[in-house]
Length: 309
Image (cartoon, rainbow, N blue to C red; front, side, top):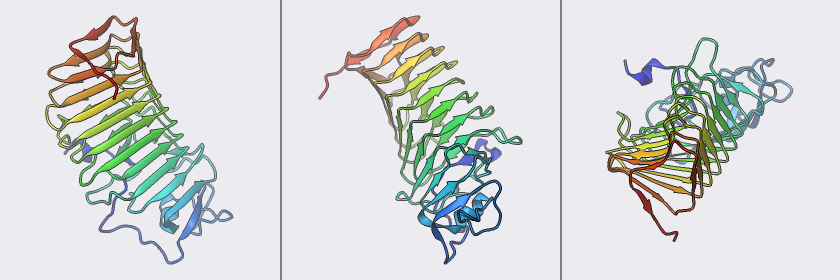
């Protein structure tokens, strides 16, 4: 049995499924969810308690609002675009997405904290689609990376804004994809656990190009690396801008493999084992405007200077 099928995935996936929950003729543009709710009306005065019922009752492109913190068992895939608006809401498990999909679909998750369910220590998986995590937290998953990003059948864009991904023991964000995928982190804290972001083109799922852009963010206090790009297969383009990589046990930022390309721009790399490293045929470049100080070793390998265009 594969790693993927062993898990119950918490999935934020926009999947156009051959089968799925029907959208009723009375679907609403705005529905409500509460742990004290019941039934399927999903109005503000009669909220649903079941996320699947709220999902079914919501128009494509509509919005589900959480009226209290839950917790909510988010056990459904996403064959239509919508917004999940849950400031202070606690989310546990979502059914993992299957093959198929539509790159025009969009899921926005606002304000939710994802933590392990009592019976389940697995993290979030995004199998595809355009997904925005905003003002969210993903924390304390013990068995797998907190956020696993894969795309099996179509191009995906994942954006994480103003969020915290913290203390996921096996790593915070793992990106590996069979199709081209783009990950953007903006004003986000990634800290604790094994590593911050690992973009891996050498895994069994790693045949698609991966683009990662990290800006105005903090990545630190990891056992191994703040950010890592590793590939001898499909290209990885990894850019870190105006960010801090601090107190990572092995590397602050590192690329390895002939198809791994990294640019670090206007960032601070401090108190890491090695601040910035180029390994095994990779390309690591800077504009010469980083602060790389107080590391056990500041730089390793060949760091290529480039001129801003």
